[in-house]
Amino acid sequence: MVALAVVLVLLVIGSLIFHFASPWYFTPLASNWSTIDFTVNVTFWVCGIVFVAVNLFTAYCVWRFRQKKGKPGEAHYEPESKKLEIILTAFTTVGVAAMLTPGLFVWGNFVTVPESATDFEAVGKQWHWSYRLPGKDGKFGHTEVRFMTVDNPLGIDPEDAAGKDDVVIASPTMHLAVNQPVRALLRSTDVLHDFAVPQFRVKMDLVPGLVTYQWFTPTVPGTYEMLCEELCGVGHFAMRGKMVVDEPAAYQTWLASQQTFADTQARPVGNATVGAASYAVCSACHGPQGEGNQQLNAPKLAGLNDWYMRRQLLNYQHQVRGTTPGDTYGVQMAPMATIVADPATRENVLAHINTLPNKPAPTTIAGDAEQGRRLFETCQLCHGDKAEGRWGTNAPRLASMSDWYLVRQLEYFRARVRGAHPEDIYGDQMNMMATALVGPGAVNDVVAYINTLR
Image (tube, rainbow, N blue to C red; front, side, top):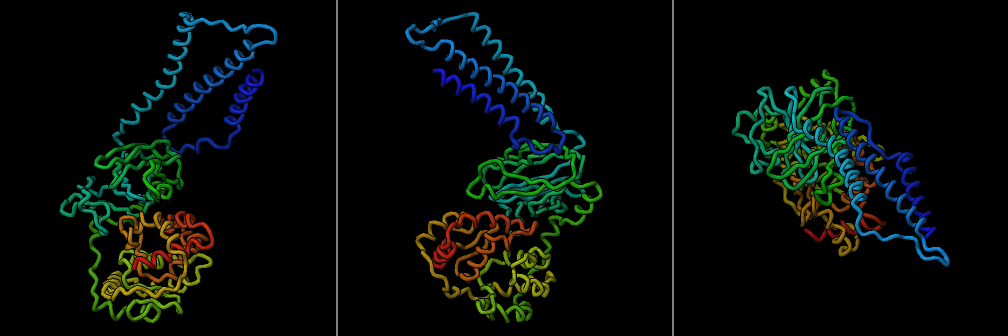
């Protein structure tokens, strides 16, 4: 019994040392919500005092009323004690009130949005963040899930005039002006998500079918990671974004560079016939039928999702791809992408590629397809059951594509040769997902299975 009492005392001492000496604590506060910190600290102190008191009292009782050699135990059984009940009830009431009272005041402030606050919308889906700002009219356009397409990912009603000037940020990076109160309107397109920036201290769930909200005032310029803190599926850990807090002038410069909904709908329609002439340069490496050429390190293009090819061409043009050390072939592709820098030319080439026959690329990779099938269970949640690709999860087609190229890209993701650029949000997600392929044969195995999905 003495040993048990000693263990309890050591447990208390160790817990106190761990709490006060631990390097894991709050991130630096970067918003107006210092009251959240105060409330949490009150909870720590109340729970900490109770934890220490209960454990030390237990240790004392174990030692004081222990069975002594040759003597009966000294414990006294008293089933009821009004005095003890009153004391315990009073202390419990005070402790609970001390924890709840600050929270009630904080919640009152949390649900009361200042009149000076501006609005922005954060839209969550597996596993991506997008944003929207009201245009010059100060109003958001109507949205519905049925309007969501690859060209309208936020589901803005094309017939609603109020939505034409809405600012659409398809990237997971959102900018805010420092010291300007903002209300975040939160919307989910699929499952439960949660909007949280640790430095801002506030968080709120996104519930399908509802628009929830939170408000805060960013107070320190900088770049902060935004997380989904609701388990939303296998890619939950990769659902990250960025909140950039700018000085007012820098924020206005950024805002002026963003596209409105009307701008996103004004993309030229591709002409496949015109695009055939422009594609002649591409065919020198990728083949006249877009079949790819391993000898020239050019992957198959026929059958690849046009929205994915558009994004990669823009990444090359904006130096998001082809600039990372070790990406030899990306460096070669970067100057070639400038040939289709003109939007009309790019859409024409993509339209032509869409007319090319999607014949399966030759099989060049050997691996354990059955083992690969088990590994692919994670991949299919983004890329589709048949590896057909899904624009909703920003995941391209894999089936029937060049298997040697898939192997190379997976190795690139694992080594952060690809996806290391700060603007390559989806590449960064793949960096994390590719680490699930553990072992020397895992990449070949999963690609061998993909080869069976032709």
